[in-house]
Length: 216
Ligand code: SAH
Image (cartoon, rainbow, N blue to C red):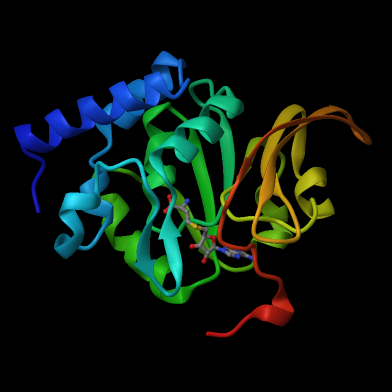
C-alpha cells in the first residue's frame, strides 16, 4: 500500500475536522497530518481510514478514533526526546503519532496477533519504537522511569505500578471507568508519593484487561 496525494488530502480534511472539534495543539495536528492512518488498517476498509471514527483491527480490538488520539496526545504535552510508555499498542497508529512528536516510545500489547503485526508494520513505515508483548498493568519496571505514560484502553482503576514508573514531574494520561464509559484522567506526579489529578471528558475505550480476563 502507498500514501498518495488523495490520502494526504483526506488527512488535511481530517485535521480540519479535528480543529473544529477543539484540538488546537499545532504539533499534534501536524503529526495527525503526517501519519498515514490508512496503512494501519486492512486495505478493505480504506474508505474509513480518514473518517473520525474508531475501527475494528482484529482480535476484538479497535484503532482509536483520530479525535481521541489527538485529545490524549495533546494532554501528554510531549517534548522531543521524552521517554513515553504506551499501554495498548493495538494497530500502532498512536505509537506513530507519538514518534512524530519526537518521543522515544515503549509500547505494550497483550494480544499476540496485534503485537506481531505492529512489530513488522511500524519499522516498515520508518518508526522504531520498543514493542513488548505483555501485561500493561505491570508497565516496564526495567525501563522506568518514564517522562510520560499513556493508557489507550479503558482502565477500571489507576494501576499503582504505572504511577510508580512515572518520573517526578511526569504525566500519566488514562481513561478511568468500570463500565463502558471512562473519564479521561491526568495525573501529574509532583513528588515520589503525591499526585495531582485532573479529570476531563468522557470517552469509550475497549477495556484494559487484567490477567484473569486473558483469553488468547
Ligand atoms: N493505541 C491503539 C489503540 C488500541 S485499543 C491504536 O492506536 O491502535 C487498546 C489496546 O489495548 C488493544 O489493542 C488491546 O488489546 C490492548 N490491551 C488491553 N488490555 C491490555 C493490557 N492489560 N496490556 C496491554 N495491552 C492491553
